Image (spheres, rainbow, N blue to C red):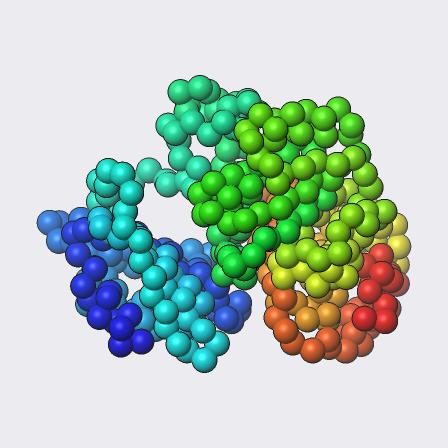
Length: 380
């Protein structure tokens, strides 16, 4: 880490722009760190925003303190992206702890960094900068302004891209990356992923969106062709019956209804997908099954039973994915005030051996339920 220490000591100054640490080796601790410079009472400090679970923690440190803190964080991170006035840096840490530092000259005019302490939130897709697909999907005007009624959608898109940003270290850059989006609908997030990975980060991406609505699929293909996105295609079809791929790097399933999510997760496991991002919807299956005398006084209330069943469904999904070798987190996708369907299951292939499912089965037996995903993954 001496080379990285030297680099940080050199770059943590007034010409520093930002840094993002990601690819946490232990997902139970700090999973991501963002750094930006701030000016407080005339002193240049660096604000560290660290993420643990659904919580974010902030601290303002001197350059020396920031250097030590970042070196400590990088002991358990795989990657750091750092931007300065002169260069963009990519710092990679191998499994054996070897540090590789790559740098590229900044292109274009350096944008002055906002050093105010409580500044306006920065979005990955910036306000004021026109993004063609956001304009055509009605989220943004031709001048880059966000349509007022679509601001929640704009925030949702950027929030989702933050989850994608976190898993960038898991995606190969030396070959084509295949991504499948099941139940893509109007494809706001599908287009956002392709734009983010291909246009902003130069990944060689082949992306397929799948949905049952023929008119939506036709419109999305027209937009993809309009933008010249040659490797972004949309197909009409059912998740359970899809057989159009043999190897997939990332599987995305957003608001696939009820057990459609389970079929998408089973497909992902079968393809040995490195990353799974799933936002489930309408978890009816276990709500119909639950029968537990101990919890009967609580479950007699329909609304509580429905919410309990939804949480149980997603908890079992996470456990089944853990059982076949994934590191899994359940995260808040967007604020609960906008929709109760706000949980995202993020699973990253860990390389660990499959583990015994006995504890999962005990839980299911206690509640007299059995999930579709459990049935689909039997024998794995």
